[in-house]
Image (tube, rainbow, N blue to C red; front, top):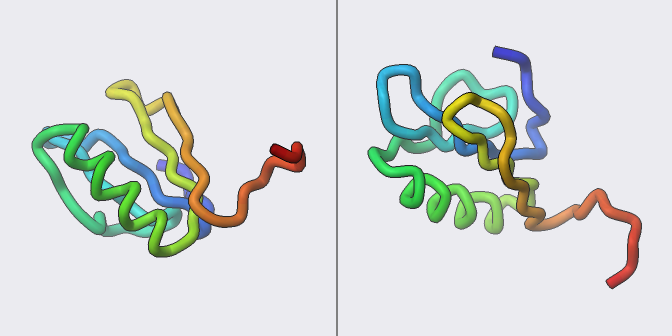
Length: 78
């Protein structure tokens, strides 16, 4: 698995089933959930508190959605 940016959190599928919330670059999950919606809810809460970007992955591992909770990389106003 590629190293991720520590300024991000990720909701990723767990190979043994369920979903994990991980900080970018971390080896251990911050939380494990049976349902993706529960993982996304917790991931958003953690990301808001840490002021990080949240990347929500699909079952195939690709990023399907991204939420910014802090330093928004966009330079567009509004």
